[in-house]
Image 1 (cartoon, helix red, strand yellow):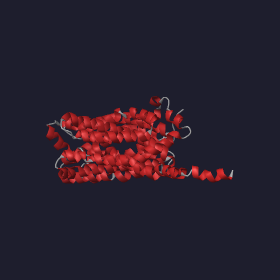
Image 2: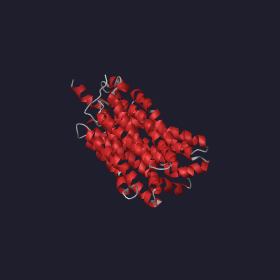
Image 3: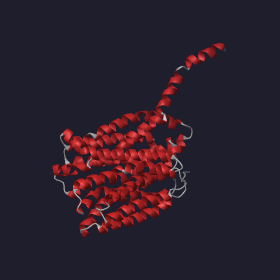
Image 4: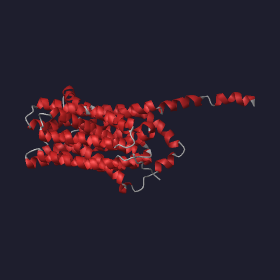
Length: 416
């Protein structure tokens, strides 16, 4: 008997090192680094093309409408692929979906710079699909891996998304000069996705533990019945859609509105940059605050009021108060998006429910959002002014407020 006792440590000697390796791979800090790097990629490839749109369009002889599709197609794909992403999360697991999405993102970014118009648009579709997978998967990951700090972590990754988008927009033209053309500038963002993929590899190993845990198989198969008939699910979807429509529309048109009212292009660009920068702290602070209150109705009212005041200011005194309106709009853009993502997590009783809610919200939301920039431009062209299009945006704020107040109730949806 003493012999077997002495032999036991020898026969199981590798176990502690394996256990330590597993703990390192599954450590929350490792997951956090992976999530941050993945989040940097979730808007960068889309934002990178906007400052280069003129060069891309002239290079291929594209019309203004066709050029605009290069930024609209990814948004449409983000909506169309959202339900597929929720199903893939249940069958493959979140970690594998993220790894697949990053691989697709690298392929889409590189395909977009291949010769030919077909490759340009096909690459835009592929990268939009990749980002859709990430959009839907991240709320569930946050809910599962950081259950006690889900709202705060939502703020962290939405802030990282906005930082990625801001950096991409700011660096696109310098990178164009550095690489001698817009193709090199756009292709360079594949490196960011590759870095994120490498950082995500430890999560693929740790995902085996999640799937092997007791009850994991049952949890991965759970669904929220009647999702498309649930009022809160629709309220979340409409709130997210309206918030995204307002954001994408003003991102596309704010500088043009200011310059058409007499502001010089340089000043309008700085005003727009300030509006973009204030999104960053708002995207962090608002979800953090959302997790500290029993319901989020007051935050919904604050974000919608900030947006509505900024839009009303652009109608009444567009240039005199431009700095104030731009800051209010930026706070609402960053904070409103972070709040929408936080409420998806906070209304979900599990990671799988979060993925399903995220899928529905983004399917509805991004199809609503895609109509914003195009519809706003069409209204401006039809009326010759900005008053009616901006007034329509005020009406959208009212719709968003109604939906957001419903979505902000203290309620948790659970699967059976």
